Length: 249
Image (cartoon, rainbow, N blue to C red; front, side, top):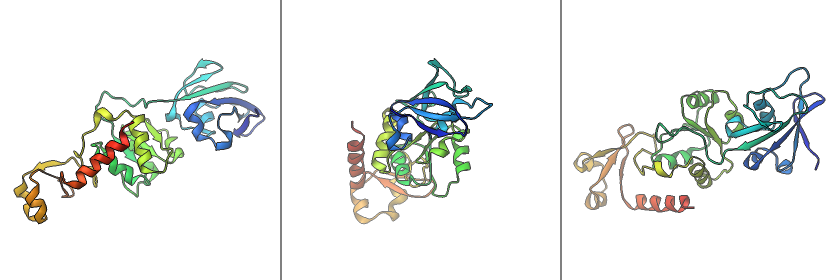
């Protein structure tokens, strides 16, 4: 099997083997094959830069071996070395602080709504610029993106590259990768603006309700930021059923 050459210029090479899901970052015709990265003369690039030359963000790498020995991603890699890199099966985000908090890039609006409906603090705007996303991720949020270059920014500590374009599949991926089941707080957060919802007396919102809603429902929640009103109507039940279907293995 012929190895592929990528990355730096020079005649010296570094041999790289990517395992399991890290192959997703390679073109389809190169997956599952040994890779060869051209090494620069006169310097030993950091292991994370060797992997980045193959399109692999450091936040997706659980461990790496340099000539069979565990090595940090800051370790310099000499020419003719052999690198093996392995993915996370489950994200390493710190669980001590409770439920994870997310920030999503500009193309993930539907996923942002789903995560908010499930009760997760999820920042999203369709005009975020990359530096702002990286800054928000540096503050302890998990960055979800379809842009692998964004995940390679030094400020990003925790993140995940979404392999699929379909929001439903993205939600399944995130739910499994970050083990979110125990943190779900269904309809506790506004899906439009991410603000925690407040219980409100029916009398306080009565004038804003349609006649049938006034008649058949008594429990309401209000977003104190955008003013949206929520109740457990048929739309609530349909969304609950849909999410249960999507998230049940």
